[in-house]
Image 1 (cartoon, rainbow, N blue to C red):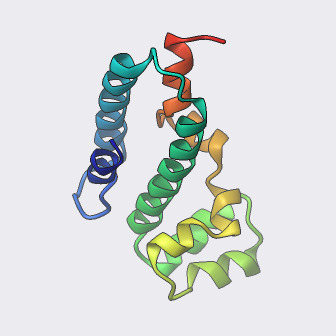
Image 2 (image 1 turned 90 degrees about the vertical axis):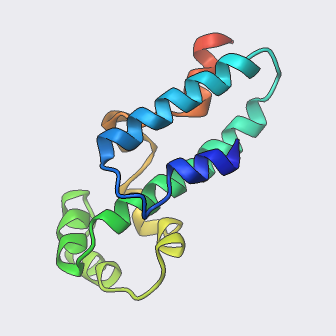
Image 3 (image 1 turned 60 degrees about the horizontal axis):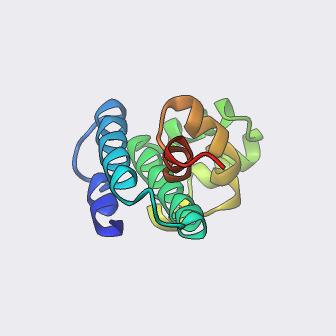
Length: 129
């Protein structure tokens, strides 16, 4: 499952936000539908955390230029100096996706509002407890 999610959140596949969301929704719904009888809450919570980091990595890559990164970080509520500092960093996409600044800017609630699916949310639809 994790390798398939990795393919769907590959940062170089050229998909836009809408297509990535749709593919993730389809795969997660099918996977949870098949395995929903298993008790796997801890596994899903850990995998959700990893998936959010992958999505943040894709979003960070799609912003491309430093100017765009700084502007979008400011829109997400980060201070100007911190936004400039992190927007001009030379660290890699995967490392930045786990940074405290990006975790605050692109948090769980903002991803849910944007329409990104979660494993735990789909599991709770099948098995509400």
